[in-house]
Amino acid sequence: MLGFVWDFDGVIVETPHEKAWRIACERLGITGFTSNFYHEYVSGKPRLEGAWNILSKLANRSPSQTEVETLASLKTNIYLELIERGEYQLRTDVIRFIQRARQEGIIQVLASASRNVHRLIEVERKKSGLELAVLFDIDVSGSGATKKEVFKNAIEKLKEIFHEDMECILFFDDAPSGILAAKSLNQKAIGCFHRELLNYGADAVIEDFSNIPLQEFLNKVGCKI
Image (cartoon, rainbow, N blue to C red; front, side, top):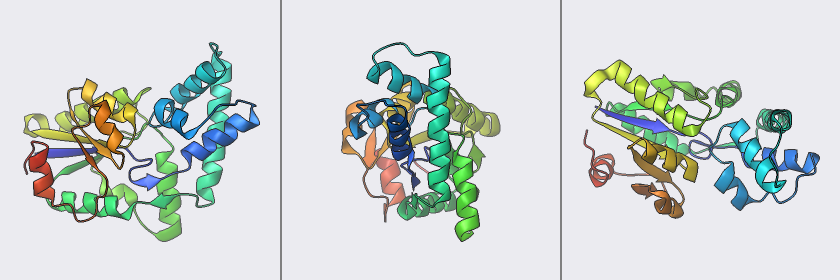
């Protein structure tokens, strides 16, 4: 039996996390926040870890817990305002790929580092009627303080439900932190959209999920249905 474990932001949906962090930094007078900084130190990480990285690296000092929580809360409020305004875009090619994998009996796990994934799912349900939640058999989003903890929880949940029948688990992520987390757990990591993720240990990178021959892809990474 196979399992696919999915990051959400930037993989299944293009979300305004980077924009929300940038606005939050501007409001607090924090300078130096760039896209490169975001992808290296913030993307794919739980919000408190991301906030700590911003404050410690851009302000060049050790921030207090209150400062970290203030930045993280401000960013969350801005993010929620943005998604309520519809500032996100579904990746339909990825959604169709998940649907095809489900039809082949592959277990699908949602493993976002963010608890706010559920708010966006609800916004989309009200907006279009699309039930993103039904794509997944298991949801461990926001269940850990780090991406590694969330991914570890995904593994444990799969093994708890399917015991020794889980032969191969693939982790799909678009950020270095996700690839590193999966590899640190001795799992297969599939980079999404960015070739440079191979530099972080990704077993393969998918730049376009449209019309991927599923069995051919699985053979390439050493799994089979």
